[in-house]
Image 1 (cartoon, rainbow, N blue to C red):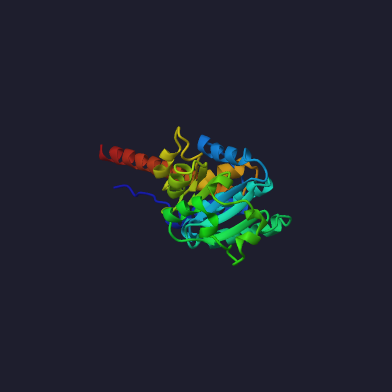
Image 2: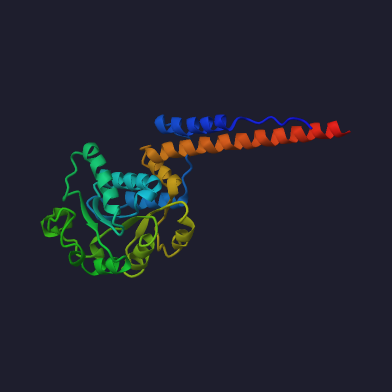
Length: 277
């Protein structure tokens, strides 16, 4: 019986580590093909007139941060650069912390943006669909103060905002329930306002049917690729772009290993066949 040569698995682990780590440090910027669903999200933001007010809802926690945080950062930056006023809410308790992390990052990048004027964080409110429905009737009933306890009557950004009639669109970054489905079913289906957003890759198939002819959902960013597509469209490569670089190279390496394994298997079988003659 012939001896089967095998690659030491430690070399495989080392190569995978190098292929994942290096693109995260040095962004390669591999070509990214944008999908129609991602372009719909981008177009909605781009076509919103400056000075309009929108809701960004952070409906996720640290478990979904690698996929949803980059897209939330890219969309929020795009809104602020276009002078679209951002009202932050969260249907998940940890969503407030996620929004605050982005807020701290943007403080240095956009020092001219003023809290309470260009953006505001209203914080988390429990209740899911009931909360969204109540917001459609009266914002002040659900959020009498912002995250810091300041009355929203004292915040210039909230002047004239009574309900969804005064909002251009809602964008939910959603990891599950409650999340983007509740925004669609209430904000769009009941109050007729555009809803868009992003979800994790694993939950995208369950949300995609809402992107239909009735435009219940105006586009959808799906997983890390959706976030990278948005970074590509706004020409600001970030963690999603470097993440896709690392993922693509790791997948390529795995394909190469599979090919090598199959070639070795075929050669060994051929040698065994010759040895048996």
